[in-house]
Structures are given as C-alpha cells and as structure tokens.
Amino acid sequence: MKINFFALSFLSIFSTVLTFNSFSPVLAQDPPATTYQPGFWQPVADFNPKEKVTIQLNNQTEIPLEYGIAGTEENLSDKVDAGKMKVIETAENSANIAIYPGISIDPDLPFVLKFEVKVEPKSNTINVNIMKAERGFIGHRSLNLQKTGKVYLY
Image (cartoon, rainbow, N blue to C red):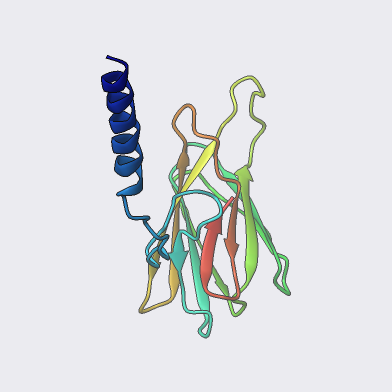
C-alpha cells in the first residue's frame, strides 16, 4: 500500500509540473496606433494648423454665454446670445477659449456646459455646439487649439 501511495503521489506531482510547464509564454506586443481612449487627455478633432482657422460657436442653451480667448495676440472676449452663433476668425493656430455662462447661476443648481466639436476640413472651420449638459456630466469649460492641429476639451 505504501508503494502505491508513493507512486500515486509522485505521478500526481509529475503531471502537475508537466501541465504547468507545457504552456508557452506569450510575448507582449506593441498595441496598434488606433488605441484611442475617450477622456480629457485625448484630442477630439483635428484641423490644419498651416491654414487660417475659423471657429464657430453655436450657443444651443437658453442663456447667454461669454467667452475669452487667451494665447492669441488679440486676447478677445465677447458673448454669444442664447440660440445664436458667433464666428471667430483668427490667423493663430493655437489658442485657449474659455466659455462660461454670461449670467449669474444658482450655485446649488450649476449650469454645466457640454461641447460637441466637428471640423470642416475644406474651410478649416471648427464648429463647436455648446449645450446644457445632462445631469452627472462634469462639464466642459475650455476649448484648446494646439499648434499641432489638435483640439482638446477641458
């Protein structure tokens, strides 16, 4: 009996070791270039930085909005009335545009903005639809144009 128990134990251990060692290792591979992950660290659109850029702000909210442009020679600020559109033409290919409510908002009921960006490649126009965000959305406050031709939302 003792020999059979020893033989069975040895066979059991041997088969376990053999099973674990029979798998070939998987080598890590470089991910493909299309590994886009949504988030604030990713660009939302591309424009041609070598051409004049036009920005179209479409206020789709019920309140007036104000904006300020930093990073350009003009350092512009202006407003966009509710339901209206504002076209900003700039020769600069890099700017940070802060967009915010133009009226006082109840701090207990914040008015959170959401931006949708689409670029018309032929005219190099960046269309920004600005709307009231749904509940639970953190919100956008800034449109950032990089010299590389990337558009970011913050």
